[in-house]
Image 1 (cartoon, one colour):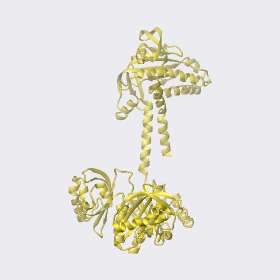
Image 2 (image 1 turned 90 degrees about the vertical axis):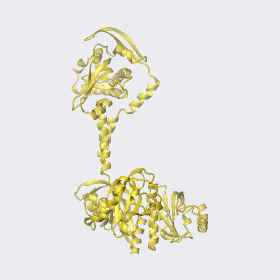
Image 3 (image 1 turned 180 degrees about the horizontal axis):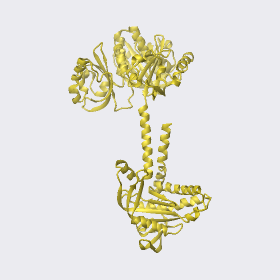
Image 4 (image 1 turned 135 degrees about the horizontal axis):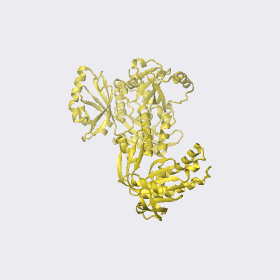
Length: 634
């Protein structure tokens, strides 16, 4: 039984991601794992019996034996029990940075060292190698491994009394091991739970009904200082010893690396069953020899239905048919495509449905036979969340293109009717001169192409100046400042600048040599009080009405080709940076005699250039969001 136990542990340690060395008091290497050979380049036979200083740079190697002698004489620990970053040397003479952690097995007189290569994996899991010796030595090594775990570990008896904790438990909760041992486990629980926990244990021992054991659940834990934190708790029971083992993963630090846990034979299966990912162990013929509880939950088969079956049962048919040939090819060539890597694949449940998952495979040598260990993590939820987020962003972007942002936000929160009175809104109408005569000689296709080209140039300017495009009616283009008494302070000035740039856009269009000749516009601007609201339920339209709207329309209709005609109120609100020219007094329909002005030009403060550049860089968010959704769906 001891040899079998040691074989399992040696196999697992050989699958570890970190190098391990065990040396005696003379600094002679007694044991290494497979990763040590991969990292340093020597074989196990070359390592065992050699001085540990072969993996050290020369200036350190020549002093190392003396360090050991000083420690044996004084007992003063400088490296043992700590982790330190240093430089290691490979067989080919190259060096690399690493983290070294040392521990001492007092009764065996051995020093155990773990080396983590910092050039490849700074978040690698700690791994250890146990020596094939007496049960007590093995237990000491296992405790060293558990103390290196990134998760807290507690072992309690039937009376809820703590029998064992690891170092991580002390770091997470704040008590020392001596303060933990012999205390009730409810010391790490909030008072409301701690007061009734012993009753939960008594009920379980009486009825055998499991509520928490064998499950994973998010709970709240309490530290020594009284603060609480969210964590994930996994519980298992070892009936032979009457002990209960609990692993606690602190959810406040999502970047904390998962610890690889090794334990005694009686705890091994239950600890594996508490893992968060599905686990499969298969032999060289692809036959399943071991699964954990998560595997049965995720895939739908029971443990009995899994054991003895080919691993291809969890694969889609196109992969399942070829899997045995993949294994046979690997056994012949030893060329690794999947082993030692993590890759996204499709898996199949008992009901035939498939789901995306991350698959990691490692190879384990155990007693002359080879086994393959695979961990599977279901990523369905993560992918669904990413797709849902992209769709929400696309939906919001499209809504923001139709409505002003603050109105769109109100509509999302309350879809009832939106209608408001705004006292300070600037309205612009633009119309193509001679549109009816021009288009009577054009095909419908050419008309639409021309309008789309010109109006798209205007739409681009609307985004830059953060204005509100209300609608287009034929060749008429209507734009306003953002209708909001709280948000608007320079809306009139921005509409005026927009109007000046509209003529730049028209000139740019005319420079392309349009097929049906050059075009010209009349533009009218007015400012004042409006009523604005959302119209429709299928295709939303944020429209507005009022005297100021009518005046703006009259400014355009009575305007001159190639000119921007504005009301007196626009001149007063636009600011001193604009140049206006009095056209005269016109008889405006519905208003009577009115002074009207022509907007000629505007100064361009340097500070405004950077602001316009910023707006240009953010004017295509809807297109980007839609593209994101297409990528996720692919």
